[in-house]
Image 1 (cartoon, rainbow, N blue to C red):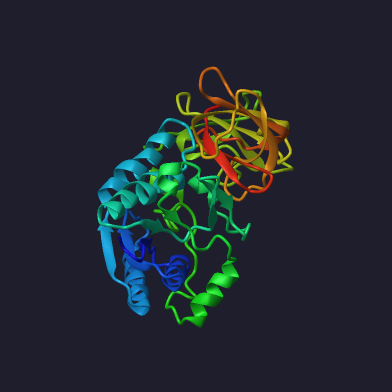
Image 2 (tube, helix red, strand yellow; image 1 turned 45 degrees about the horizontal axis):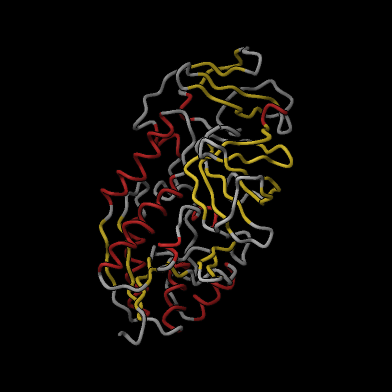
Length: 352
């Protein structure tokens, strides 16, 4: 048997994965740097790949590139486009983790002899009573557990997350101390493969613009839009309608009728929901949900956790009931639930 465990480190070319690789080396692992060539729109992919290669050289570890561009296009990009076309709000970052990083990359890494894969995600993993548990990261502002709710025990058994107990400033300090070329590199923003390209602008290359009506809850037309598919519940900007005391927010859309419904004011009851039905559920921590169970939940990234109850329905779907009404519940987005101590119990996709 091998005396040392081998880790294939997913290196994006950013500071987080750079530091994670260095930490694993210090922990005694044989680390192999791996960069995934994926679909990219804003042209930063070549520089990211070069930065990842240079960091691997600095650390003195092997470096390999995986060309997953076609699979990424089929499993993440097409999923996003089809979702918006159907009138929902998909989450491509969740799908990227499920299908690419912890799907194809994990599979290939294990086939090539790796014991584990590692990423620069801010999330913690612990082994409790023989099972693997995911916890929110120490740095609550950077916690990325929301995007990892699809992981199962089978995948978690081969995953390492070195940054779970560090804050972002601590990570940058480590990078600077070790002279890593990514120490001051800015974090990527927005949807993973879009970079700085606005989502609506990208979608218009796939979904034809189609003028329709912007209406209020009573059905009165307030303005026009260029396609209901390009909007999402909770959206405030891009409506181009003036003459109201408070901002307008999208409360719903109908891609068949091509209408976008709005309400005035952030605290308008039309913008809030008291519950959501969830499908495509993944339960990480085994628990009986045939009766309502108290959980802490969020329905979008970086949203503060809120109290709720979760129950499995006879249909196999789950119902998440909010203790207090929640703003902008968007069909297609992920709802993720935790214990009070930050352990992720699982998640699902909002169906209605």
